[in-house]
Length: 247
Image (cartoon, rainbow, N blue to C red; front, side, top):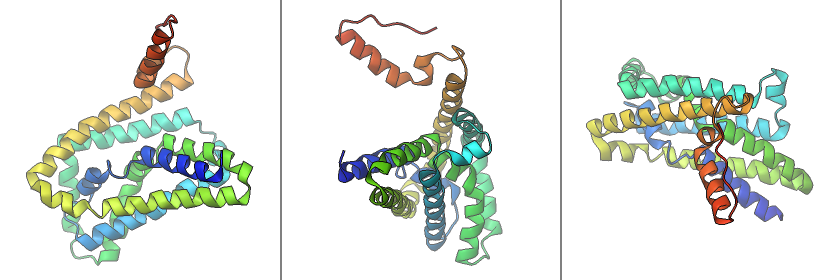
């Protein structure tokens, strides 16, 4: 693998895992009532945090989790619980009310003060683990190991890839105003509630995957990784092999 191929593969993997475009409606819901400048600055703070957090794992590997004695499975389960709480608030409509109340409370603040206050409320669970989940962390650690073959150049390119993805987070979130105006108040309520249901399902999937990787036969493999298992089963069928069904 060349350095260019390494950069392209790392960028695609990280962009797909963070999915800044897919998280735009959630960011819009979390910044209801904010001015355009307040949203832009909040998005910038989130992107800087994402770069520092992912960069730390890229440079140190899993040393941070190892220092606290936390496994990736435990991180997945804890992240799933936090996402479940957020998803329930969104599905019930509580998030819109709380964000609207927060917007009224911070209406008299300057743009920078508002951005700092909203950023503090979005670090968890929006920043972690929604944007930067176990998948993104694992990807950073894996590609950091591959970057060692390229020496200092590999490390620099990897950090550049992380910076590029974080720059796209800012760019995507800056389109929040367009989406909010297009959907309107009723449209935003509908989108947020539907996304809340999806987020609840994602949270349960996080916890199932964490339980599957930390236990023996407690969770079916095709439940923990449903589509991956289906693809493997299809490959086995095409190759004439027998497909086993884990119990």
